[in-house]
Length: 89
Image (tube, rainbow, N blue to C red; front, side, top):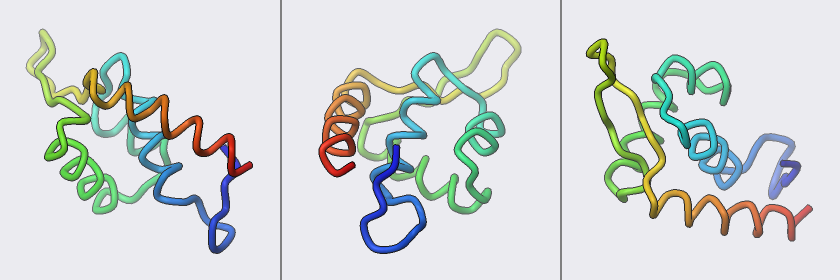
C-alpha cells in the first residue's frame, strides 16, 4: 500500500486497512502492534474506534487470551479500502 496523501507517512486509510487485514484470522493485540508498527496508544485508539463501529470483534481464545477478529462488516470495508488505496496509487 503506497498511498501518501499529505506527507510521507501512512494515511489513516492504510492503517485501518492494515489492522483489518492483520485481524482477519484473529490476532492478539501485540501481534497487531508489531505487524502494523504502531505505538500502544495508537493501536488502542484504532482498536476502540474499529470495535465501536462493529468492524472488529473482540473474542477470547481457548487459553483465555483476547483476540481481535475482523467482522463481516470489517471485511466489506477492507475490500473497499483496498480498492480506494489502489486507485490512489
